[in-house]
Image (cartoon, rainbow, N blue to C red; front, side, top):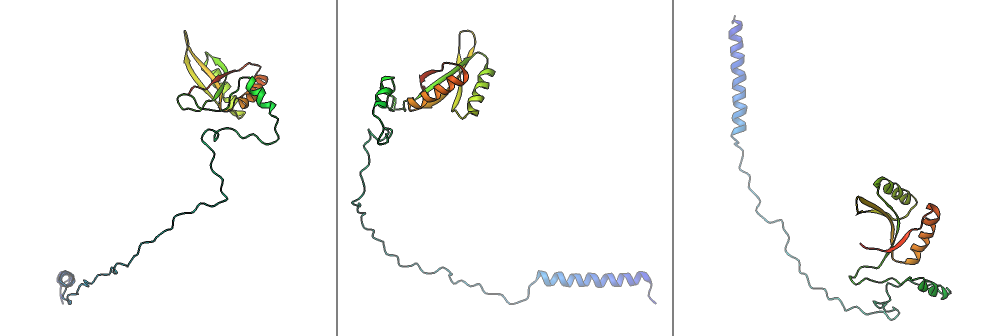
Length: 182
């Protein structure tokens, strides 16, 4: 009988021999060399002829565009009284236009002027909650900074006058209407 130590050496030798054969087969590939297909898979270029598009023809039933001067004027619905225009022009309202710098002429309401920025912020939040377009501007004063609350800007002075009436009544103030200075 073989000793236990000798049996383990024989089994270990067979395992090592098997591993050597497997690694030898993996390292050296004895199969036939495969050929690489060198034919192109890209098709030939197609024959493309240029497309000729005819010049467009203007339809007869299309109106011409408005001229530059009248394009920004508000539309006045038919049947409105022309006296309304006279009233707005006598109150100092002008039709929308551009300033000398080419910026749209607009109007704002100065609702309040506060030394305490928290009060200005509180009024701003109330105005914003009611749906007004409002903002605060800081302006240096004599001894401290002023926080001024504005509503607007609006291009049509008449629309801002309507808001002024509502704001004056609600807050018990007399808001100032000023030209918007961006």
